[in-house]
Length: 414
Image 1 (spheres, rainbow, N blue to C red):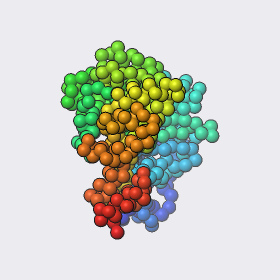
Image 2 (image 1 turned 135 degrees about the horizontal axis):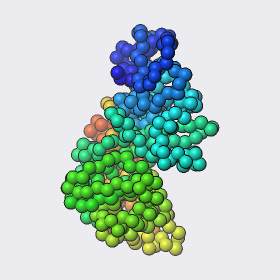
Image 3 (image 1 turned 180 degrees about the horizontal axis):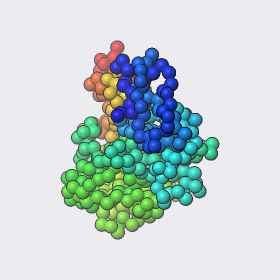
Image 4 (image 1 turned 90 degrees about the vertical axis):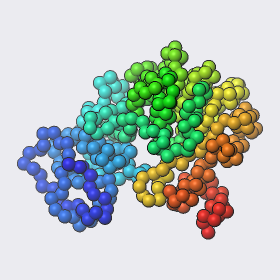
């Protein structure tokens, strides 16, 4: 039986009073019972019916099922508050009793890997992947706040979504098939970087007979061998850290290397070295656009090394993909807005020369011939096609005033 309540407008409403207690608590609660009677007010999408409170600690399984069935992206579990599911970027409260300390402690016992128990006890936090048969795969962070356990689950795909089904700009396919060099996928947390990278790995896997090594923390999307062969390594499970794994990867005859995130100077230096020596390297950064991405990579290094890093980056870089998720006008989820920078000759000069780095955004805006586009150019196209509303486009824009001027010039708004 589904855990989820019907959406607003379906006529299904919540019960007028509390659900009666059963004579004994269920032995293994795995679902939340529906209300016995009609309700008096509608319930927001993504909510569930009140559960029957048992004195025994709850299981996290019903809430993970609710997350998967609602199509949400994240589940938040905190003592003193009902669990919440993020749906289309908005946190929605589940209509269940607030969690108790023994509930979240039991959640941790259910999902935490045995090898991470000591780490969690020592550091009060842990990151890992968790799979629940018949429900899905999740990236999990467990932590302590005010001495109680808290958990956040991010739902991830079991397999990669093909690039053709993601609705990405057409240049992403050819960019992912570059024989060598560096491609960076950037954006804030929750902007879909993992999904884009997984689609690019899948595209390579389907079109090239190559060896692909991924280094992730944790592994989120599982790949099966197609034309290529994929080895996936998880930090703290299969390897000590990104830097160690990158150095080891150079002895594993890779053609393509995916680095889950460039977090420090050592990882950036190793990724650049791999790209310069004939490998195709992909990685992520938490930056908002191509120009900031270039500056962030250079700023990993001390000033006396930055001139050489600029030359290395200018020679190795193939492209930068920056993305944000924007609500769709029809209310059916979100779509991706992308800034795409291809390393043309003019972009290469701007990377090498500190005085020209500030012109990268304008070079991207003028590079439509090469498949480049800024965020605002993509937002204008999405609004023109009716995919997003004007309010959503303005909220996601890098320069709302300039975008409105362009929309007026095109006759799309008054």
